[in-house]
Amino acid sequence: MLEDGPRFFIYLLKQLPAPLQYSGMETSPSNLARLLGKQDTFRSLRQEAFLNLMRTQAITSAPFHRLFKAHGISPPLYNILRILRGHQRKDQAAGQTYRGLPVLRIGEEMVTREPDMTRLVNRLEKAGFAERCRCDEDRRVVYVRITDKGLGLLERLGPETDALHESQFRGLSDAELRTLNDLLFRAAISVSAAG
Image 1: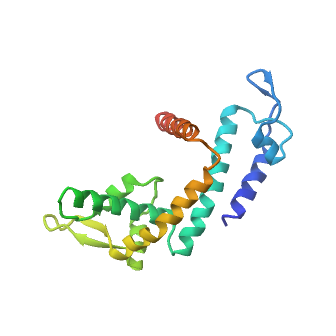
Image 2: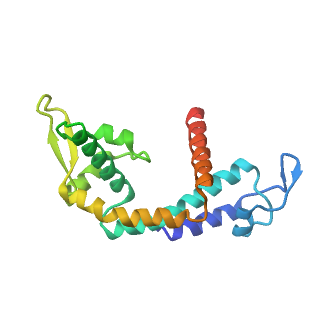
Image 3: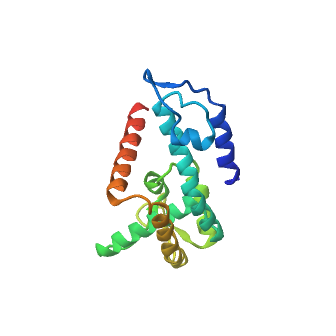
């Protein structure tokens, strides 16, 4: 499915009508347009930026999908485990008892919003990477916490994910990466503000 995604995406891009002008200025096809075999430019810089983001996301996430699949998890499950580990470390550093996090709180901290957090937690629990426990003060509250098996998985994945991040962005300087991060953050804020 992942391999088909980029091909389908390129097919869709080639179907888009695209006039030869941006804001009244004649331009030649962009790098993305040339890569995709488009003869014309995109309708706007915003359209091109959006499609560039989608394409880049598909390309950069594919190796992570393969890595996580080889370890029996998905990117959202990996994200949940990292959230749980982060809170465990924070609690331990503060000398507090690690109780875990409510599912709702985990959902709020996810990199991408997932519609069925309960199902994802069920998968982690079934695999032995996380466990649920009830709050002693309020039995209605259920916490999720990472297990030693989950910590071990993150420990094994750490060097591999670090290496992927390094290899994917080795062509960009630190200054370029800071600019990229700033622009992506500003774009996300702009989209969120627009509703």
